[in-house]
Length: 122
Image 1 (tube, rainbow, N blue to C red):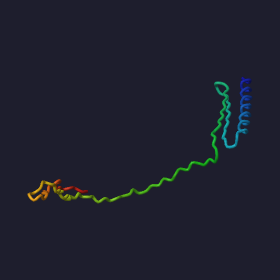
Image 2 (image 1 turned 45 degrees about the horizontal axis):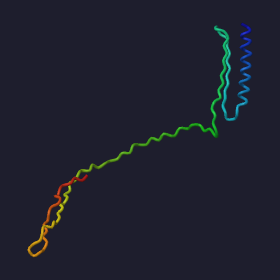
Image 3 (image 1 turned 45 degrees about the vertical axis):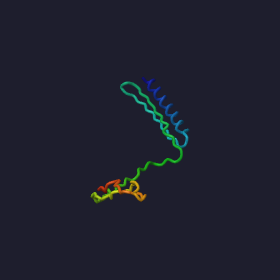
């Protein structure tokens, strides 16, 4: 049992030294973290470590600032209801050639091409 604890402590110390060396050699602007855990419990010795490289960013890092929320009153419009109007569209007349009279003069008659009607305008 004493040998297992001794080996665990040596391994923890070696991992801690390696972790510190890796953290010290990290480039500027890179966030790295390193953790070591060791313990003794009813199930025996336990050992663990973690290492994180973090994230890389180029240039300046600005914190996230949410945009302000602008609450405006709703626009209230009044609409005047438009009542439909009826207008009269005049009929369309056209003169058509019918023939010649006894003196040789042309004869025309007036014909209704399109009848007048009521149109609804809004």
